[in-house]
Length: 112
Image (tube, rainbow, N blue to C red; front, side, top):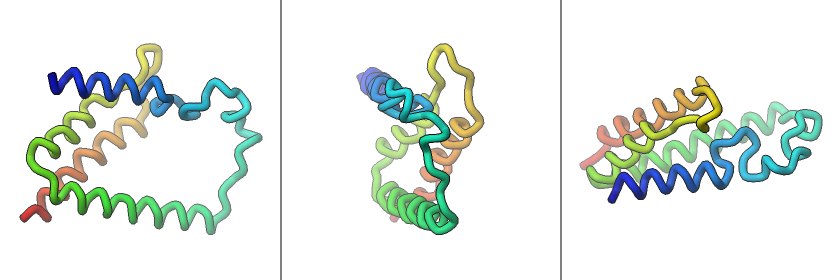
C-alpha cells in the first residue's frame, strides 16, 4: 500500500510537470524559449543561493524531528527519481537524489 502511494505521488509529480524541463507549463512553448527568460543578475543569483541554503536548513531541521518511517520514505523517494520513459537520466537528477539521501543522513546526526 505504501509503495502504491509513493508510485502515485511520483506519477502525479510527473503529470503536474515537475519532472519536465519547463515545469507544469511546458505546453506553453513560449514559457521555455531561452530568449524569453531573462538572465539573473549577480544580486539575484546571490539571493537565490541564500534562499536555497535557508530552505535546506529548514528541511534539515524538520527531518531531524521526523520519525524513522518518514526518513525512510524520503530515502525511498530519492530511489524513485527516474526520468520519463523516453528520456535519459540527467546528471542533475542523480545529484538531486544524492542530496536527498545526504539530508537524511545529516538529519540523523541532529536527532535526539
